[in-house]
Image 1 (spheres, helix red, strand yellow):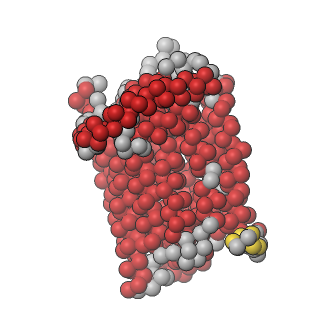
Image 2 (tube, rainbow, N blue to C red; image 1 turned 90 degrees about the horizontal axis):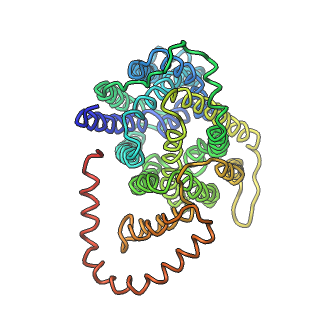
Image 3 (cartoon, one colour; image 1 turned 60 degrees about the horizontal axis):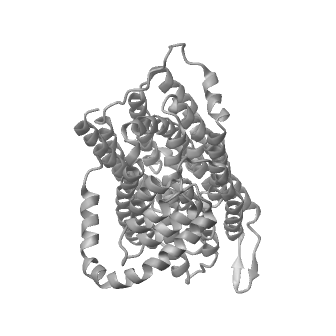
Length: 508
């Protein structure tokens, strides 16, 4: 592909990601949950079902990969599916209208049905988009490119969710909490952004599928091929277990803020803004680390930090929730960014280009099926434990607290699964921690090349020898660093400016 055409296509993909994030923020997430809770009077189990539907829908990606392998029409399938998925939101926008008044008790299930069908089409678009765009992005810049794309998308989502939360708070003060039309306005704006995103997506050229040596027709036995790849199977097992551990509690943090802590939407979105800011900062850092040190060590480091977050939520009390909720959001935004980006990159890295859509579809189907059961089980547990309440020291533990603790315990059990995944040329978690220390050190600047080269030397050596050598070299450099401290002070302002200019450059 011509470099200019490729660069333009990559930029269109970033715009598509930004506008899609706007739709996802306004027509989904905390606003969809608020609409279901406040207007449709959804129960925790129904919230769990809503959260599970997009993951259950991943099963259809196997059918999508069959279409791709049979026809090679990744772009066509992606555009058709994404338009169908988004246009179905018109039915959700119509739910408060008088024509549905006679079905008031059934409107929550109507919402579930529409989200289910929309998620099926969204899942079809997901596998075709991933097969399409992953062939478009050069392998040597995948981490940096998708890090930048995710960062820009997160920034756009942050802005609109902050404005949307403020809008809803003002709307509810002017009318009432049961008035649904504030949500409907946000859904309309989100749908508009989603349709514009599809227009930019349509301007990205199709990528050619690799030609097979012999055309023997498509055989469904190819769907079992990824399961014969022990390394890829290990990745599937890890992500499935990790998603289950995360998703059993994920939908109920929002319920906890709305129902238990009585936090208004404006405050909720402010907390979300801090999470997004942490994501924005870390995406620019995680991308280059992923390209240089690998994805597996990032997953390990991020996983151990994410384990403590459910316990931080337990510290939040009505009227005294600001610090724990803020810390939980910041840590979650920063390290979930690393985990998600690295899982995406290692998935692409371990799936062969020939037949990649089959690998991606089977991965999404299995992990989605396992992950989808988690919020449903979480909802069932929430109902079953509804009357449970006891005091631990000065903290009152409720049913949602127990679900949070369960999530953390399961994460501890599953984080070891990633050790079975082999990633060629990956560094150690210690290397990632040291690189993070440099990247987050304002005095040292971002991505200190000295420590990076030191960590990269002789990766085949044992971890203990590497730690010893790193410690010795750090000690030897300490005197030089002290002498250079004043010089670095002069460069303190210049370095961030240089990094900002680098960020604005196109990824070639």
